[in-house]
Image (cartoon, rainbow, N blue to C red; front, side):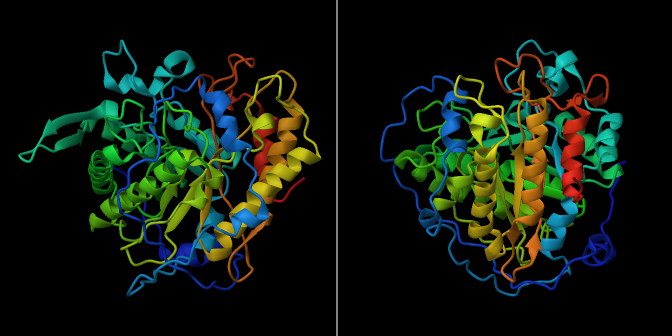
Length: 459
C-alpha cells in the first residue's frame, strides 16, 4: 500500500517553518501566450558537441539595463484561496537538494529485457536506487530530492477515434517511480518529479517548434494528467516540474537563448508550461489544486526570462508557480574541460555567481515569484578539489542571503545539486558524481559538507 504522508498546514505556517517574517504582497501568475507563430529561420544545423555550445547559455552575462526588460506584471487570479502556506516559508523549508540523476531519466537504451532496467542503465554497476541511499542523503542534511523522469520509453502509444495519439504510461514504470518517491517521503523529504528527456531531436514527443506544438501539448497534457492522478493524495512535499531543458535539440541554437529561433521557441515553451499546469490543476482531487509547480525556460537557461511568461494558475492559490533554472555558473569553472577552463576560485568566479543571484532577485523573487535552482554543481577535475568546495560554499551562501521578496524580506533559493553518478574520466567532463551509489557513501565528503554548512550559515 502506498504510504501517504499528510503535511499539516499548521506546520508549514508555524512550527515547521519557524523564523519567518511578515507576509509579503503577493502577485499572481502571468498569462501564457497561446498564439502559434512560424519560426523565423529553418532549424537544420547539426550540433557538433553539446558541451561546446552549452557554454553560450552558461556564460551569457546579462547587462543590468537588459534585465529591466524581463518579467512583467502578472494577471490576478479571481477568488484567491489561502491555506496558510507562504511561498517564502515553503522554499526555505526545501533547503538544499540533491538530484537522483542519470537514473529514471535514462533513455533509448538497447539490449534491455526489462523496462525497469532503465533505472540503472546509465550508472556504474547498473545500480538501482535503495532506501539506504535516500537515508544517507537525508542524514547529510539535504531536504529535497529531485527525481528526473523520462517517460517516452515507458508509454504504450495508440490512436483514438479522432486519429490523435494516446500515451499510456506503463504501470510497472509508474509503480517504480512511486516506490522511490515513497523512499523520500519515509524520510520526510521534499520531492520533485518531472518530464525530463522527452524532448529529443527526433521530434516525436516534445519539441519547441510551431509544427510540433499541437503534438507536444497533447503529450504533455496526457502525461501530466496521469502523473497528477497517480500522486493526487501526496501532500505539498511533492512538487511537479513541467519539463526540464526543452530546446532546439540538434541545431546551432540548442544552447543559445538569445537567437531569433530560440526566442520563438521560448514563446512556444510558454504554451507547454501552461498546458502542464492546466493538466495538473484539472485533476481536481487531493492536493493538485494547491501543489507547487515548477516551470523551466528555454534550455534551463537563467536568461530565458527575456521571453518567458509564467502560466495562469487556475488552482486559485497565489504564488504556487515556481521558476526552475540551471545556472552552472560560471561555465568555464563548473563544466568546461577545454583549454579555456579554469579551476581557481577567484574574484572573477565570485562575480559570476553574484550575477546569477542578482538576476534571480531582480527578475523573480522581488516580484514574489519563487525560484528553485533545480540543477547546479561543479565537475570533478584533476586539480579542483579545494576550489570547487570554495565555489559551493560561496554559491550556497548567495542562495540563502542575496535575494529578497517584494517586502524586502530575505528569501532562500533552494539549490538542488546535479549528481549523475560519474567520476570516471575527469578529462571528458560531466563528472558530476557526488554519491557513490554502489558503496552508499560520498565520493567527496568535504564537498557535500561545504554545501550544508553554508546553508546553515557555518564557515
